[in-house]
Each structure stands twice: as structure tokens, then as C-alpha cells.
Length: 215
Length: 249
Image 1 (tube, rainbow over the protein chains, first blue to last red):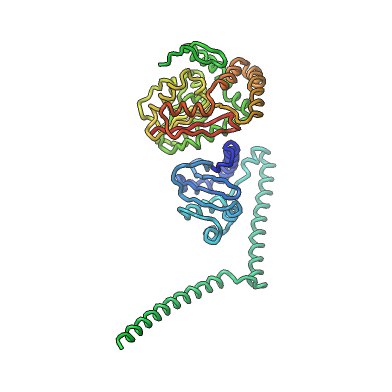
Image 2 (cartoon, each protein chain N blue to C red):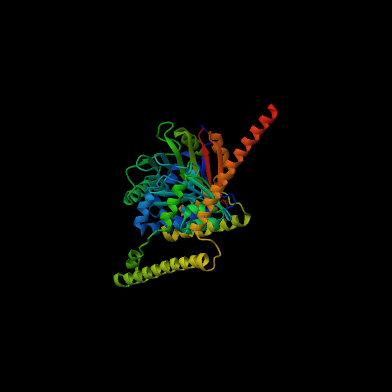
């Protein structure tokens, strides 16, 4: 925990966040089952702006959020809140970890698995809505929410795809990913050739010096 | 053995042998409404204080934990889940009524298998030496007749490397907060006790016992004198409550 933060406020904030997260997990049983595989792992999130430390531990009955943890951690990541938000929303967390500004220590595979589980939580809102509003109204509202989320997801994916196509193909503002990977491959090969050429040159120069000394 | 024959009971000076019985009467009286009154008096913040205690305890799966003056079992319930089936939690309280309320609450909420309930005096803990990885005492130490004896007893039953956590009311760090807190404690608290638990006197004792309890630095010294190492404390809610932690070397 950051020393600047009042432990009461920090702990209260974590308690509220933990309760909300665990309520969502209760309504997404597939997510809970997937999390059980990460039980005993501890993820340390050190946020530098705002300054805040959070330790996240998947447990059999949900997730524990702690402000303090003095044992060994599975993965430790450090960065600003915006970097963490970028990782949370990333469709390719590995690429975000490599190219982003987060500093990572420990096991990245567990972290990527956790990010995948939490970002793909399929929360079924129908049960609490039916409990609160009754069978008919609850079911109808859940159906509306489901359709809205589904439409939102599709629209967002479609927009993202079209935007990518426009940037790569129409406007040619940046090269497509495959083209870029191909380019990097060429650069890598060129680098290897240059290194080989350099070592040949060194060898040749050495041989010439040896011959000159004999003469 | 201390030569002093009297001790505090709130603002009153009473015979040492009488204090335990008088404290017992207070808790027999409030046991059935203890949780409700805690929530009302602290606006639910006591749960946050206890949560921070659990974080600082560092309790892990398989640990053995003693919760002294465990009352209605808030901490014991959380520890029971953390230590798992291979761990052990002992909920101890000197007061039979509080222990019964705690035992019923924990069993009713499915906490069993790794919890034991023991009626015990914190000054004379009935456990072998080096038995526990962690001991907690939340809002209980100020009711103990001889705190020094209790701290030494806790040190004895802790394993080397084990932690003692004392969560207790303490001294507010600002003058303004201190005045507001005094008004709340001596005017509003007994009134709430009267309205909700029909027992103003017990809550008057609560307010008085907090004022005569050692402040942060004094309790730290007492823990060091008892033999604890690396003693530190964290103020919470402006010092209204402090969490002390000491390690057995």
C-alpha cells in the first residue's frame, strides 16, 4: 500500500471493488471456474499515477483484493493507471505488455490468462433481475440488456475492423500488421547478413595483417 | 506479580479481582445485539478496520490462527476461509455469552471443520508454547485486567516468527477530531446504547474504557517490553483506531 494513502479509505475502496467483482463473478460461472485454475497466484499491481498498490489473489470463492501482501507474488506489474486500463481493454494483452509502458516481473502467462478471464466475463444479469422484478419483467429487461450488449459488442468490433481497413488499405496511414511483420523479418535477416559480413571482414583483415607481418 | 491491587473499569478504580466479573456483565448484556451495535456505532467502518487487520496479518493457507476476544467471530470467519481445511482457527473469548453468539453465527453461516471455540482468559491462554502462526485481538485488550500478563501469554503461545495483531481504539491524532469524538462517545454513544440495546451503562463503560486505554506509543512500548520484536502501528480513521503488530523472534 502506498504510504500516502489512508489505510481506512484504501481498504474501504478495495472492499467495495472486491464485492462488485465477486458479485459479477457469481453471475458468470464460467469465469469463476476458469479463475479456480489461478488459485494461489498473487498479482501485484503497482500503480505509479495515482500512487496505489493492489494485490489480487484468485481464490476458490472469488477474488481477494488486498492493499498489503508480504509474501511472494506470481507476477508484478508497474505502470500508470492509463497503462493498466490499456492492458485491461487489450484484445492482444501479450502485445500490450511488450509494446506498452508497463514494467513486468515474474510469470506473464498467468497474467495474460487472468486478463483474458476478466475481460471475457459473460455476466448473466437475468437471475438478479428476475429476483428483483419478477419472472416476466426481469426476463424481458435481461433480454433487452443482452441484445443491447450484443449489438454494442458487434458494432464496436465492426467499427474497429472498418477503421483498421481504412487506415491500412484506403488511407495507407500505417502498413498492415502482416506487411509490418514481413518488413521486420527482412530487417532481421539483413541484420544477420550484416553481422556475418562484419565477421568475415574482421577475419579477412586479420589474415591480411598476418601475411603483411610475415613479408 | 504486580503489587497494585486495583485497576481501571472505565473511569472507576476497582479491585483487580472484580474487573473480570464486571466486564463479563457488560458483555453478557450486549452479546445478543453486539453486531448491530457495532455497525451502528461505527457506521460499518469496523469491518474496514478488521479487513485491514486481516491484510496485515499475512495469514496463509494452512496457518493456525488464534482470535482472542473473538466475540461474534468476524475475524475468525474470514481466517477460516483463508487457512482452508488444512489450517486451524481458534475463536477464544472469556465471555460465554459472546462465545455462544459467535459459535452459533459461524456454524449457521457454514464455517466449520477448521474452527475451534474455546472459553479462555487472554492472561492465561490454555495452549502449549509455540502453537500459532498468528494471534489477533480486536477491541479486546482494553478489557483485560492485566494487559502485560496477557501480552506475555500471547508471546508464549506464538510460534517463532509468528505475528500478534492488536486492533484497538486509540488516541485521535488531531485536536478537532478528538473533541468531536469525545462528544460522540459521551453523549451520542450511551444514547444509542439505550435506544437499541436498552443498556446505556454498558456503552458508557465502552466510551470510558477507550479513554483510559494506552495510546499508540504506550501500547507499542508495552508490546516491546513483553518481548515482541519489530513492533509497529498503523493509525486508522485519524487515530480513532490503531493496529499494532509485533513479531515473536
